[in-house]
View 1 (tube, rainbow, N blue to C red):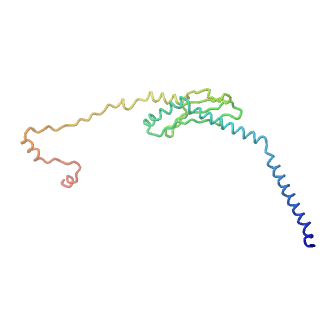
View 2 (view 1 turned 90 degrees about the vertical axis):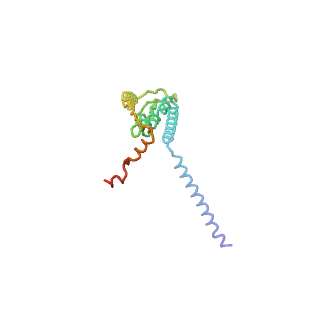
View 3 (view 1 turned 30 degrees about the vertical axis):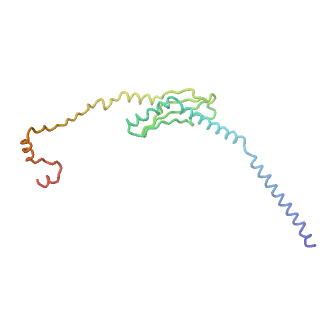
Length: 195
């Protein structure tokens, strides 16, 4: 009995110490996690709001009449240039800060390695809609060059090929005369060896 009483107080003391250690760790840990700055929360909310605005703006750009018209031009541009053609709508996220009330986006036409901004689009963040769509000077220059450039098919006259037909022999005697003559074969190896 003495043996159990001797260890009983020590066991109890160790148990209390371990509980205190666990409680202290939990208090320090929760205090560390609770010290998240309000600025970090506000920055995160601002980033999420910006992403939402960019996505809404881009979706509205994809539904514009001007974008759809440019997409319709893709087959003819591919046929003319014989290169891969893409029409892309993108939002310029570098132009304004967090305080800007508008966003700027572009409808871009990629023909091979050449990229051209065809339209500039402005989005009002307060109204949550597109306020202005205007063509850029780059698109106007390309269209003028296409109109003033002479067309290749109009300059070249179609080449007519005439096929000469051999007249039919009138009698059997004429056929015998033609059969006696040897007809030369073009490009054969026998002609080269004979010479």
